[in-house]
Image (cartoon, rainbow, N blue to C red; front, side):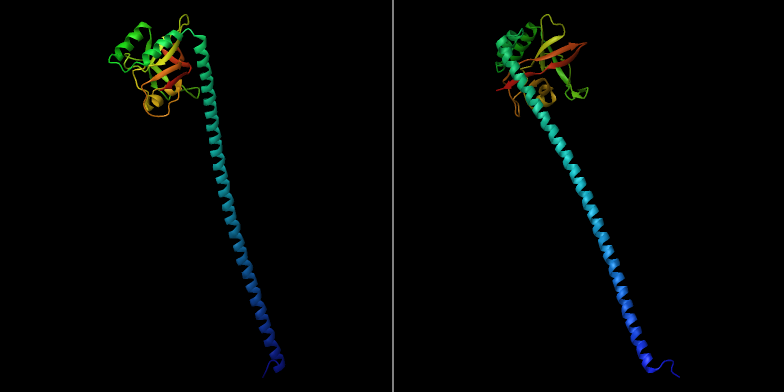
Length: 236
């Protein structure tokens, strides 16, 4: 016994087929939407990663720019300070400061260090001018956030790297020059406190002829030496 007539059965079969196709299309559409959503989500995640990376790159660039600007400013300040010292050296040469005669004698001595009895000549000069020889014991010491080398008395003239001339009628005030017995080299420049004590034209190498254009000004209090104003020296 047949449930449906042949014609109805045929229609039902076609209808079921159509519904199946529609269902398959719906499933395919939903799946494509899901796949598309996942793809969009992955794209968004990738974009977020790129944005985060770009932000980090920008942050690094800003820090580099800030460091470069600070270094440039420091160089400009150092150059301005050196120019000011140069002008003061020129002015001192014309005004003949109280230490002028001492400096002339010192430069004459420094220019004759190639003689056999150079050390004896230096010891005689130190004694005759009542100079106080001293050395730098910590070139990287800091005070109030600034580099402030520490100095101490030297055992003898040969060991010393600095000579201090007491300024008349000015207790604790000294004019300071380098010990000409020592060649001026990279170690003395960077570790001996020289680059903080004197502006110079030194770049590299070793020099035996060093002339002082402007002596450094120091203050001595309780056996502690302190740079009041750097000097100016020139290598030849």
